[in-house]
Length: 161
Image (tube, rainbow, N blue to C red; front, side, top):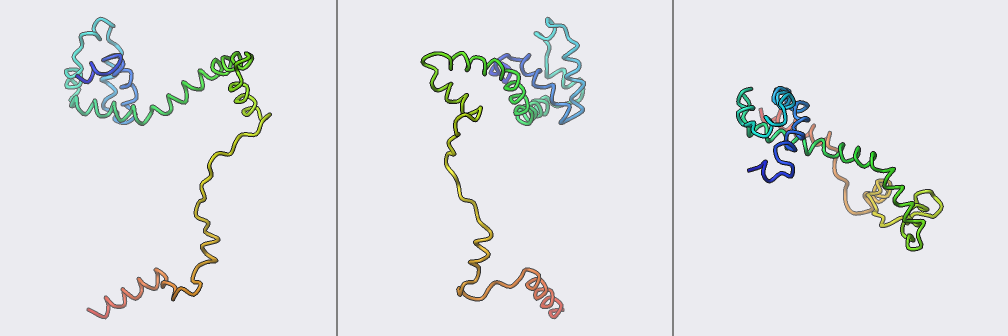
């Protein structure tokens, strides 16, 4: 059921499985056996039986494949973007050279530093210096330090014994 819902089916699933030995080394032999199979055998291989041959619960294998996909997917996306970047830039330059390429020209000029890049929205973070100067401005006694509170509690506990 899972393999039918995954684009690329069992082959795609087992491609994703190549990262599983990094998370669970006992899954390495399953992936290695898959890699040794001829394409015709891969089409009919029972992945549950392959897992069970190595004493691995198939649901555990599926879970680790999913975990590996989530964990390593970001790295793969960055790599794919880096590999495709020259072609993307070339296409953007081609578009920028056309009469209708105003947006591409603007983007390229901003990237090159010829135009200023809009700052966008800014979020003010906690300013600890301001908080420190505003601390205890006539709003009552300051809280005792953590250390003094712990010392008081220890003293009370000793007195109870």
